[in-house]
Length: 558
Image (tube, rainbow, N blue to C red; front, top):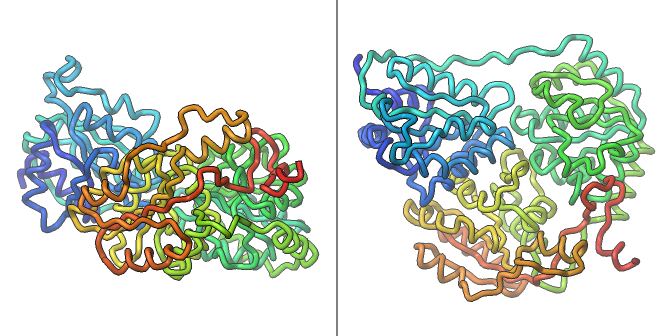
C-alpha cells in the first residue's frame, strides 16, 4: 500500500512492538506527529517538558523493561537536546532508537533555520547513525536501527529523516521483526580453559557488571556462585543480578565499594569478571588491581578484552549462553577457609552510618523496608546515588537504574517516569540530590500531566554533596561554588508543577511519608533535609589501589 514517510515511521514502530514513545514536537517532525495522532490508540506518546527528559525516559523504559526505548525530537535544538540522554544510554549499553527530523533535502547543509548535522554530532555516542533522504529506504532503515540497538552489546541508534521524506509516498509492505541470532565468537577451547581456571582456584571471587543484567543471566550467575562456592561483588550497573540478601554477596566494588569486596578482590587468586568493563571507578590503580589473581573475563564485546586490565583467559559471547555451558562443566566446589575469611571481613567492616540523625542511608533502609525491596529505584548522580546502591537490598535485576558511565546529573526523574510507564504495577522511586533535582525538575510537570504515580525523593543537604566531600577531603575545605543554601522551596515548586509534596526533617517521619506517597497513586515529591557534611564511605582516593579503601573510622585514627 502507498503510505507517506510519516505513516511508514509509525507502521515500523508498530512492527517492532513499540507501545510508548517519549518526545517533543516541532516544525520538521510535524508530519510524524500528525501520523501518531491517527494511531494514538496503538502507540502512547508521552510529551515531556524537555527533549533531554524524553531521552532519559526512553532510557529508563528500556532499562526497566528490556525493550528498545524510543524518543522523538525535531531538528536543531530539539535534536541537540537529546544528546546528553543519547550519550548516557551509550555509556551504559542501553537499547534506544532516537528519531529526529531535519530540514528538507534541498536546504540540507545550507545553515537553514533549525538545521544541525545531528548524525555528525552524535556519531561518537551512538552504535550507528542514519540520515534518510529517500522515502523508499525509510522502512528498512528503521528496521535496521532497531536490530542494531538490540543486537550484541546494545546501545542507542539515531535515525534522522529529512522533512520531505516524511511527506513523500512509496509502497510499504509490513514485515515481522527478524530475531537476531547471537553470533558465536567463542570456541569450545575457550570454555574449557575458563572451566580449568575455575577448577584450579582456591580463592575465587566473582565480579558482576551490567552485562549480566542486559543478558538476563541472573539465574546463571547465581548458579555459578553456588557451584564455585565463591563470594560475589557487583558494580553499580550489576545491581540485582546477585540477591543482596545472599550470604555470598559482599556488596559493591570500587571507589565506594565495601571493604569486604575491595579487600577480597585484592586477595583472591581468580577474579571472574562477568559482563563488566573494568571501569576506572572499579579498578582504581589498574596496575595494582587484583594483583594476586588471574583474571577470567566473559563479555559479549571483544573490544573490552585486555582494554583496561590484562587477563589470563576470556570468553567472548552472550553471558547467559556462556555461563550455561560453563555451569554444565562444573561440579560443586568447596572453599570453606576462603569464605570464612570473607565472612570475617564482612563482619569486621560492615557499612555503617550515624544513626542518631536523619540521613540518606536511613532513608534508603526505610524505603527498602516499606516496599519489601520490590520497588524500582532510579537515581541521579552523587552521594545519594552511592547511598542508594549501598543500603537498598536489590534482589532482582532491572530494579536499579542509574547513570553509571556518563554520570548524568538530572537523569533520574525522566528515567523514573519511563520505568513507571513500562512497569505500571511496580512502585517507582527516584532518589535525587538537591543539585540534581534542579537540573530537570521540570519533568515533574510531565508526571502530573499524565498522573504517572512516581515518587521523587529529594535528599536535600543544600550543597553539591559529592563535590563538597572531595573539597573537604582533598581541597582543604575550599567550598568553591558548591553551596546551594538559597530560597528555593522544592515543595512549593512540586505543588506548582501539579504534584503533591511532603517535607521530612525527622527520622520518625520517613516511613509514614513513603507509605503515604505510595497510597496516593499520583506523583509525589518527598523532600528530606539531611546534614550538609554527611559523607559516603567507604571510599578509595582517585588513582589509588582499591586495597587502600578507607572509612570514617580510619579518618578518626589519623
